[in-house]
Amino acid sequence: MGYWDGHSEGMSSAFHVAKIVEDRLEREMHQNAAEWEQYANGLKDKLVEAEALRTLATGKANGRGDVIAALQEALRAKDPDNPLLAKDVVRRYEDRELSEYAPKKGFIYNPQTRSVRRA
Figure (tube, rainbow, N blue to C red):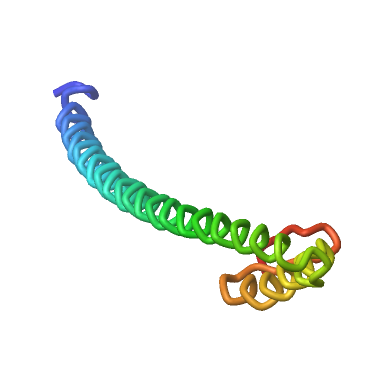
């Protein structure tokens, strides 16, 4: 028996082990890909739900804004000098509301820039 004849069986076993490992890694890769796809789809569903809630909140806020504008016009017709019609008074009310509401949602409101950022 020659040198290569005695080692060919060992090489065959090594290739067999390599094939088993390769197959296992491929199965794990497909399983991981499936899990990540499921996770991504869950995130997409949450994003759609959040967008629906944001749309609802925006619609309600717009409706309330319309009511406020109508009430301001009615007040302006009866009492044009009413302090509630002054822009700085309205801004103080908005700033107070945003300063109280933003932290409840995990944000910090900056009244100087009139912006919010994550807390």
